[in-house]
Length: 431
Image 1: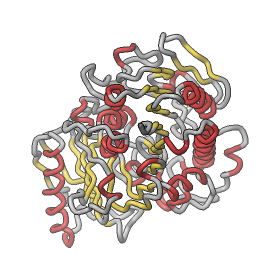
Image 2 (image 1 turned 30 degrees about the vertical axis):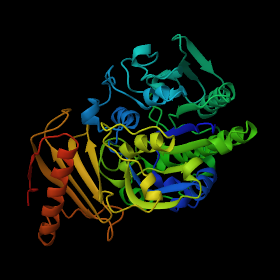
Image 3 (image 1 turned 180 degrees about the vertical axis):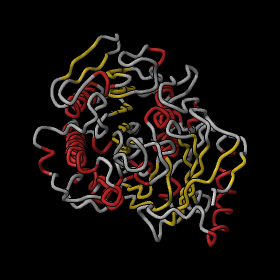
């Protein structure tokens, strides 16, 4: 009987899509991700459905939008009755493990067993950015005992993951490896790369055009950010090397993705929580199993599509309550029914909604604060991504684009209803 494939989620935090070489970054930060994407399946147009940590994680665990999970802002625990990826893999006979940052419970550090989403093995902290620093990694085990792991934080978590893989090599396992990097260190609002790494990427060697035009904290933080990305990619290489040495590489699916991007305080007063590409577009690729030699998928894929994809790839039935859909039909060339846009819910900085098509970005906002949704919104942004890929020219009041806005408004309302929301009133922007 053929062994079920092992599944590893390699999950980064706040990583822009254009840090990857396959997306045009010239600095050589991601040779391992690039190889994974080229030899496996590269999701070229991958987007979060909620550009903030907790809500995005709730969607990735459940395959539902944040308004459906109830975790529409940070600090709301995942409901006890929520079924996660771990529950489905447990039921299919897998060993399940979680290592790193959780951000779906109450409190900062230790996570009670009933708030761990069904994962059997546990070595994590709810908010690892508040329990640890770059060279001071503190997580909590199954008995909620504090465990300090040696090394730079990326390496500390990677070491723990390799130990887990070695221990579980004889049984199919599902491992969710959740890094903090390249997220900023909250306690001192900085991007602490491994010692010496930030020096490799300083001096403005490569600054994405949106950051070059808008400034923010880019020049203070980008070198450290790139250094963190480089170490993450080296960790991805170590995971792959470990799989080879354990004779597991042919039996293991790896999914690499991130919860949201980073705009370095160019779009609002912090790093994410906006509809812009810098906040919502992320690097995503799969390797192993059905994803081997899968090529480059050009369709627009949402974070909510990734959980059903993982289940489908492992031969586990996709539950009807999941709001995303598996991308495996795209690998078979079945593209006719795939959505022509991704839907984004925005919270905390605003109560907002957006859709992103291959050409257009359309976003609306409400004066409501920290609510799950609103009855009335006002048009906020319209970008022509074909003519303005860095979103520097807002067309939301352009008379010549009134017809486009009307069409996108109707599509956005439809997508909101499909996600379980009531149809809102959307008002035009003030001229």
